[in-house]
Image (cartoon, rainbow, N blue to C red):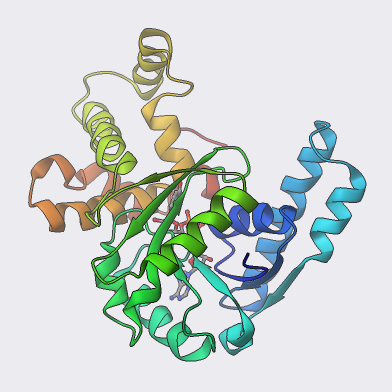
Length: 283
Ligand code: NAD
């Protein structure tokens, strides 16, 4: 079983993946762009672990052991000895491809799986940036990673069964997630259904059909969803929602997936949802 893992990015998702991997007993090295981002990611993980202790879900000893298994770097070269890497940086094709090309050179064990947490980019697109595309696959976790038990496993056409098996068994047997498998198509299973739903809710606000509050109340009380689509969009991050919509629209050419102008304007205004303090709601 994989023991030394690397996590690229310590934003919302990277921090969550790092936390769960470290809790599972793995040695986890987290990369971020610069020191301030490392500090922010570290704080995110520490706060989440503290919350778990307060809620009685984690003992103080397990928290300390988890923290001792986490280390941080701003130098991707430090990933040379990693047995598996999980990438969770911004949903941008060029940036992800650049990082995978570097990882492929740096990670010495050429059978070590290189996984992307992309929400919408086809895995083959990312794999094409590497010289060893057989080790690239999608491993798509859900937000918040310490709470939601699902992982989507997405092999590209070129991915080896060995890489899939190593990555999937780490995500299921170590991290405790339930895996579902999808073909390599933008949105995979969950976002193919969820993204058009959130975009439709944004269009309803844009067209003045109903308020964000009433739409969310409608779906909570009328469809038994734990949260409404606009609360969910704020939680995902409106910038991330817009990136995903753009990629899915490019893949399918269907207006169902196009980014509504209101979403674009909110992102331009810096209203990214919960993580920036303002989206459809204020935090
Ligand atoms: P985030 O905005 O919280 O974090 C973005 C990360 O990208 C940060 O670590 C940041 O330092 C890094 N980054 C930004 N610009 C960069 C650059 N030029 N080079 C390298 N790194 C850069 O985003 P997030 O919500 O954690 O999303 C990360 C990935 O996870 C995306 O691919 C997203 O689609 C996917 N994802 C998000 C969710 C969600 O609910 N937010 C769920 C599943 C998957």
